[in-house]
Amino acid sequence: MIDPKNRSELHSIELRRVYPAAPERVFAAWTQPELLKRWWGVAEGYTTPLAEVDLQVGGWYRLGMLPPDRDDMIVISGEYRVIEPPERLVFSWEIESKRGPPVISTITLRFLKRDAGTELVLTHEFEGPKEMGASFKTGWEGMTARLGRWIAGAG
Image (cartoon, rainbow, N blue to C red; front, side, top):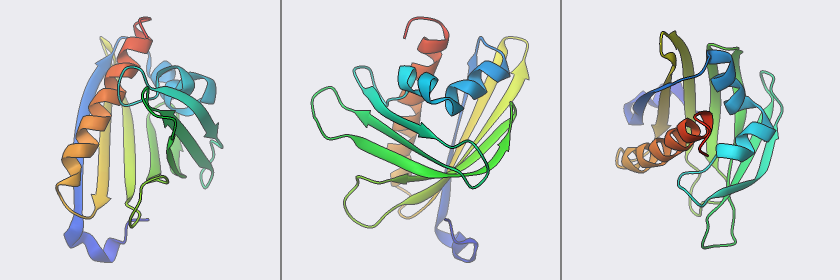
């Protein structure tokens, strides 16, 4: 969990993307294991053999994505902190399989109803070197693009 006393090292990135779907559908894509397995991954070719969700405040999730050229899964896990369907979802984020000290982050997803569907506002707050933000942003851009293709029926 991010230490509020250590705010000087807290950084964040924000992405926004509009999907041609109702907030309920986009929220479900982030919270239902069978749907997460269809789109979750940072780039094309990734698969998601692991998707476990205990959708309750204090409940945990584990997502494992498998790169197309390796057999070691990248596992992300965390705890749900706020669940307000279909408007907001807040959870911790930790890369389990990363070597070195753990980087624990907080992800906030807001699902805003728009005429064109749903605007997803993703905020990723993290402690540590600010440079990590570029890597997180690249990953989230890939993830949100894959979600968009899945919602459009092409993924």
